[in-house]
Length: 260
Image 1: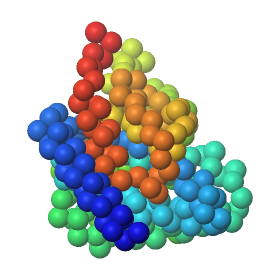
Image 2: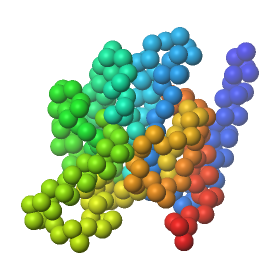
Image 3: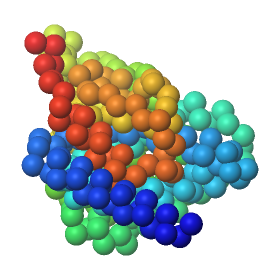
Image 4: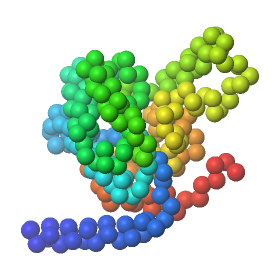
């Protein structure tokens, strides 16, 4: 059995190296967005409580950061918790918020974040989050606000329709206050009021969803108009470097026309 496992590991490593050789010289996506789906199903299949899956999924994001930095990806946006997810059991929501606070706190002393100048921002209706999480969000954003080499956005209490509504309200207030002429409103102005306005490139080149589901579930509805979509039949906690390399290889083989 051990010999078989070692043999399989060797094959996996060889395939991973071959994939890296294929993608390393090609055009890399500048901005990758990922819907982190399948944590609960991962836990259920192992007869574990749901938050064990969320813990595993949160740990996987640390690996993802390393892999993306290695690839030279500038921006990552992670869909971690939607506004609809508040409808889950109070215990599950509470556990997810604890995990979010814990992971955000770890960012403060994360050497990779500071070494690679990663600006971290939480996007969504932050006011819906527990006060302790809101305070941690402020601390992390303050600690990384001057970085601009890489961007890590974490969507918490996020909804694509909510983002568009909130952007519209901001613009409406400016019009009401005489700060903006309605005739000046165009796509660029609207984008400047989205949650992602702080990023150098708001629109993801590549959107990945794990777990086998094939829908965006309200994720970055405005920004994803011309994104390449990749749906992966693996739960997020089981996501591997090899999976990321395969999606990037697929991205490199597609011809992007942006409607032309």
